[in-house]
Amino acid sequence: MAKTPAVPGTSAKRGTKSGPVQDSAAKAEKRTAEPQLASEPSGPETVGKGSKPGRWNRFRRRVDSLAGRPSAAYYWIIGTTVALTSIGLMTVLSASAAESISAGVDPYSLFIKESTFAAVGLVLMMALSFVRPAGLKKLAWPGLIISGGLLVLVVFTPLGVNVGGNTNWINFGAGIQFQPSEAAKLALALWMGLILSRKGELVKEWRHTIVPVVPVGVIMVGLILGGHDLGTAVIVMAVVGAGLFFGGASMKVLVPSVLGGLLAAVLLAALSGNRTSRLSGWMGNCSADLGLCDQAQNGLYALASGGWFGVGLGQSRQKWSWIPEAHNDFIFAILGEELGLLGTLVIIALYGVMAFAIFRVIMKRNDTFARVVCGSILTWIIGQAFVNIAMVTGLLPVIGVPLPLISYGGSALVVVLAAIGVVLSFAREEPESASIQK
Image 1: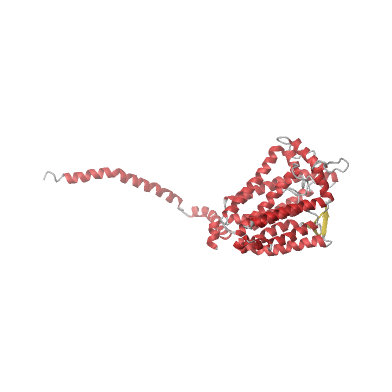
Image 2 (image 1 turned 120 degrees about the vertical axis):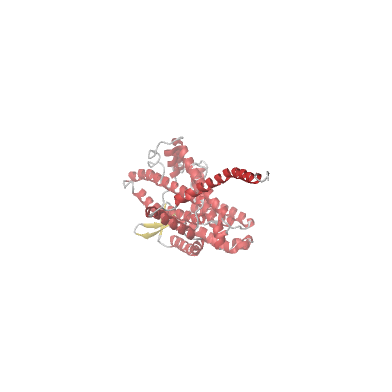
């Protein structure tokens, strides 16, 4: 009988020990419940305030479900593109105003035109970023046929316009001109992606590597060379080579093709009197009477006078009729003079970030079409930027290649922005969702 009260006492003691545990659990449940209660709408006013964000979120989810969820590379590409385009507009205004004043025309005319083309190109870029890969494949054949047809009109009809010794532009009247060779770069990228993706593993055989990509590329390059534009022809050859490389072509065919293209470019430069003189001037055989090295030397003077921090925006001295085409092919020299070495390094860094972001898109994609298209566009934009900067700094001879997104030129700017929009469409489409949809 004496041991009987021990059982209730023991249970009571255990209850006192478990009390703090129960209290802490209750407090935890209360803390987790408080945010839920705070997030719930308490009345009509709260619902009204949250309706706009709700509609925006639903709209964003709807867009993401249709076009794919943007990746981090998507925003890096947009940021570098907008930055380079803005810097280009600023420098075009600075460089072209001096030339326009010297010619007695409106100093803002070229800037206004370039700004209009930039606005059109940015809208086109964002529109293409929402196009699914299936829609891009549908544009491949029409784009190739139209760009090839326009090149034929440039070379073999009076519609072709000769500027600076190159017949690159087609005149549609009313002051409207277009450069089909720029559109041919994007068309080739899309078309090669379509063809090589359909071949699959067959592309590793030499016959499927060559046919039909190499013959079509040769035709396009031949039409561009018919207009005496060696610089653009070299870039197009690089685009074709990049498409084959990213498509998994046989290296036994790719390496000889690249070497053959380089040999052909050298021979074409040697057979042209104008280009031979440029090569001679680049090798140091300058003549003061002929002015073979004036453009290249004044470009170097501009870079040297810029120093570390530049002479200031709009304060360039070499743009006052000392450098021909200061707002076009040699705009990098004006940038170096006004913004200095640090400014030129920022430009190079922006191109580097863009290249890295596009390469991330290529590495994350698991389909041949995306790799070929993005790889070709990457080689086109970054390769052309490298050639232009090397040309201005004297590492390469002057071959008349503009700096993408910065040099003056409506056709080039719109088409490059459209090409970046194509890359953005692949950056929006996550590989996981793409594989599920397939």
